[in-house]
Image (cartoon, rainbow, N blue to C red; front, top):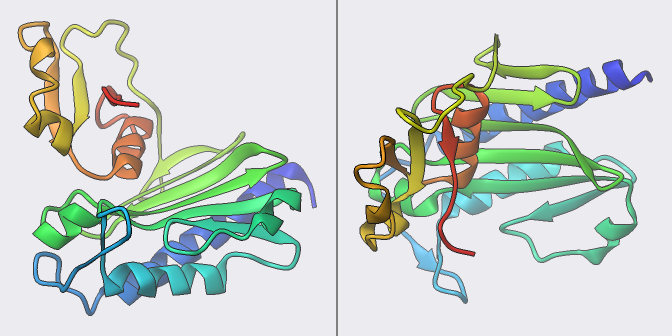
Length: 204
């Protein structure tokens, strides 16, 4: 299979998996769902596990590795030239609170390099897909990153928790518009689609 055809097939698989994940999430109501805590204190819900099951069933084929936020790591993936890296529900805190800033995130790495990925936010009905040499689409339409050349006037997405801690106050009166947003994957997808200008974190 040519590289072009391979990337097209990768995107097809990613979109199909994201659509199935959306169906798996349909029975759950953001803002009204039971939550547990992982060892490190991060929240996890039945929805996280349900989507993880769907993605693991649909994505890895024979010879492909797997790395998920919700699955115990199998280091066998390090010996595979293709590996799927997923976060079944990125922005679980926002999902639990009913804030529409969460997403399902899928990435594909080939020989250590990212080659394709997709992010779906079912709450906003935004699907961003992209692959090497294939560009990026938002809900099927081609998009590009912002062409802004200066930070002045830029719209920048910032972590909800960083904003709550006051870490973004240093940027007040510096000519940028700072907007809070939860899921890191969703923030990056919005940047890739050109809907905002930038995002970065202020902590390691």
